Length: 158
Image 1 (cartoon, one colour):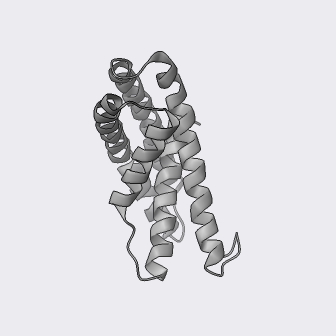
Image 2 (cartoon, one colour; image 1 turned 120 degrees about the vertical axis):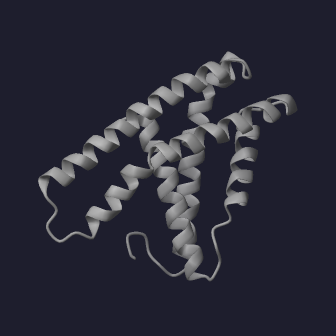
Image 3 (cartoon, one colour; image 1 turned 90 degrees about the vertical axis):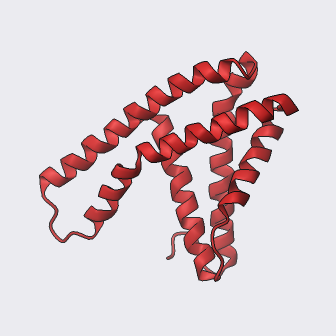
């Protein structure tokens, strides 16, 4: 499966699970805080200069928004089929086809934005960007799991 799809899916799932946990505590998911933490994480991990932060972060956010939009139909169809009693094979195939299209679209976006990022980041920072993105997702997911654990739920429980 496409690594970009996996990362995007993991971030969306993390945001979703964090949002569910926050609702249990009568709090809403703070998207601004999430983006701020991601900005600080990338700034620190990539050792970005102020100029790089000013140029790179808005472009990164634009890329993430486009990836999110590209996957909307796939996520919608996936949610819908979970509520169907006897889904048809054609419905499963439609979801698979749609999600594969997402992977292709994300790869196109990555290539397009890679060219833009090359103008902003050094080759080393550009190389490390994907590593940092994976690290951020892992840490975000781990923190979400730990927050649920502190809330009295064991891992694997609902």
